[in-house]
Length: 256
Image 1 (spheres, rainbow, N blue to C red):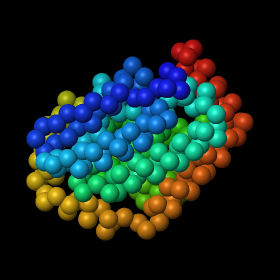
Image 2 (cartoon, helix red, strand yellow; image 1 turned 90 degrees about the vertical axis):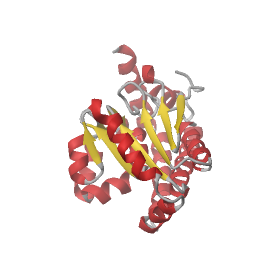
Image 3 (tube, one colour; image 1 turned 60 degrees about the horizontal axis):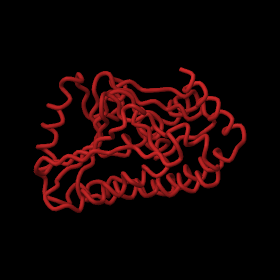
């Protein structure tokens, strides 16, 4: 991949159901610098489309998303990348917060880094039994972004969130279910059926109701938290030690 890399996204419509599928499995459905903004624009477009009652975000070939493309992070100027991250994260959060219809993350396989962040930003998360949320930021000298700090604290409490994020830990699908992060967990071969049943429930709700419920439940501190995350991430990306860690991680990946 290069600086111009962008994840492929396939869009499918089935009546009131819209599915946006990350479709670069040969790259682990990794995200390029502008991809959070592209996903935000897609959500805005689908949410404004007449007849669409629910949006599903998922990944192709048994992986949700490996998170940011490490070669792009390693090769991009730190200041330029930091500005992009701050802008893109805010746009994605605003698109989900402003959607009049429900946004559902369907996670099969790994959702790592910002991939986990996207899943946690969604209104509802459905997971296969083999799915996992991974938070490798600290090992790369980075801090969690895409709202992960707030969503994890709300689910597991500050102490466990610190341990997960500081150690670069992960959560299995069953752990996500017990913590209330996932709505349901099913075997991978039952995922399509579970999604269809949920889609029928959500798509039949009068338009705008989901958006109003989301707004009522939202914390007034959410936007401030996202801004703080983006600013902290920008500082980490400028740090020479972080840049060296990214370069080292990329070298390991290329050698594997």
